[in-house]
Amino acid sequence: MKNTIAERVYDFLKNYPPFNLLSSNKLQEIATQVKIIYLEKGKLVFKENDNLHNDFYVVRNGAIGLYKKEKSNKTLIDICDPGDIFGLRPLISKENYALNSVANEESIIYGIPIEYFESVSENNAKINKYLITSFASKSFDPYTIEESSNVFTDYIEKNTFTESNLQTSNYTKNPLKCSANSSVKEAAITMSKSKIGCILVIDDEDYPIGIITNSDIKNKIATGLFPIETPVANIMSSPVITESKNISILEAQLKMIKHSVGHLCITKDGTRNSKLVGILTHHDVLVSFGNNPTVILKEIKKATRTREIRRARNKANTLLNLYLEQNIPLTHILKIISEINDAVTMRAIEISIAKMDTKPPVKFSWLATGSQGRREQLLYTDQDNALIFEDVAEEKLEDTKAYFVKLAKYVTKSLHKIGFEYCAAEMMASNPIWCKSLSEWKGQFKDWILNTDEKAILLSSIFFDFGVVYGDAEMGKDLSKSIFETVNKTSIFFTFLCRDAVKSPSPLGFFKQFLLETNGENKDFFNIKSRALMPLIDAARLLVLSNNILEINNTGLRFEKLAELEPQNRELYKSCSYAFKALLKFKTKQGILHNDSGKFIEIETLTKEEKLKLKRCFKPIRDIQELLITRFNLSRVI
Image 1 (cartoon, rainbow, N blue to C red):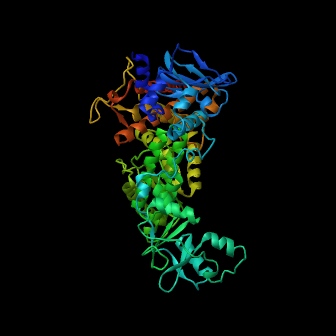
Image 2 (spheres, rainbow, N blue to C red; image 1 turned 45 degrees about the horizontal axis):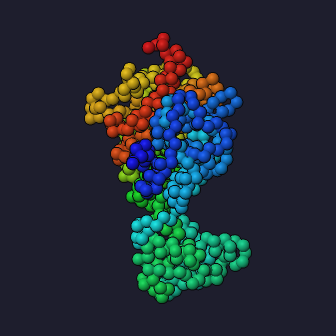
Image 3 (tube, rainbow, N blue to C red; image 1 turned 90 degrees about the vertical axis):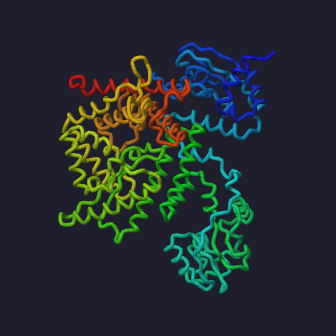
């Protein structure tokens, strides 16, 4: 006789990790052992410091809140929706529970016996990796996740033997080389000019006979073991390890490990008695493996052409998808992708400067605005940027601006080729309107703030969220200081900002239905950016400006800072921070799924659980808008 309850459990679990990583037979075994637990709203599953249960849990219906108790306050750490697992400490750390778990609404959860699960999933590396990652993400406070900048590298599968590892290595052609009687000084100067960490020593027939690296110079010259004028033959590593140009990535890595070297000389026939054609470095091998943030950043910095930057930036999309699948905390994801995006912009600027006839005539700062300025840019978006250059004499202003506009056109063109579309409204540094001297920018913001109108509010709200990506950071700080000094001279500006922040109504209608677009090409779609994310972004910006909070641009971090400053509104600000991150994560997943920005969502394609999760994030929007209306006396204006 069939166990229909176990079948229902199986049908549910098979759709969610880590259970979808098990074979059908093993998952059916687990389903027969699952406990089905009904919880009324407010019912505890376990308390902080409770002894460990024999089960960990999966939410079947409803929602389970995970809270941290701090004195008399209760901080929401996470909300577990259908398919989410919680109570993992028994599986990982063997310590008492660190959080309180409470049913936020009427819920059904599954209790999975730990011992039975461990026996069935034993030696399954993918499941172990998933559980460790999930436990780590639940171990940190998602509002203030600062514990470890290295959290990612611990969860990335390194050197996985995929089909791509069997492809031919991409070695460097035309490597640096010198003769055996060249001095170390000459070799070092060549390496320094080329910004390359090694040089190959060749004989008269162009056969490789040795190699010198930065380490050789450090250990043998800097220590005084040899004088700097000594011939390279005295300090080179010899013989070299050679290979043919057809060596695969995997073979190259294994050979480097076997011989404890970081370089392979590529010769015509793969032997030392053959002409040198290139060099393969350990870095080249790592780049071939790809999905590692350190490798991607190094690849970007090493790039000499736009297409090379684009290739590296595309790897970040794969990395992003991997992080989302592993449930890595969004704060960490934002940090890594923001660093990659900034590195992309910096390298594009450096390559563009090299194209100019002369070096920049004065100091300048490249500003990222919009989502990149807030360090919230995960997917490819359109460009929002500006440029500040040092004040110059009136007679030099026109020529100086012309130089930087030309430079900015090179940069924006490169960014466009990399994948960042041109801004339709031309809010880019290549537009002379957004390429100004420091004094001009100060005057521009002063005019926006003191002579407020709808256009000024729109423009200032975009440019308030700026971050210096390249150049003189002090100019950015100087501009920020000037902005806050001007803001404190008027209150009407805040009223206009407030009106703009609350203009978008709650994302839900009177009957709790999603408010969809009513016309245009996106008719009947839900605009998650304008209806859900922007109200939170605008509210955070307004509140930090009114509190004179400098140099915090990220929306989540802004709400966290506000929670510190206003304990009476702490729970609201924390919930806004959590909601923003959850919504941004949801938008990003939709963008990856549909290969677009994720801005417009077809609600009918979402599961019931996804709809509930979205609606749960909308409550803080209504609450923060009510706070703004009261605080800035908007009820008297509207």
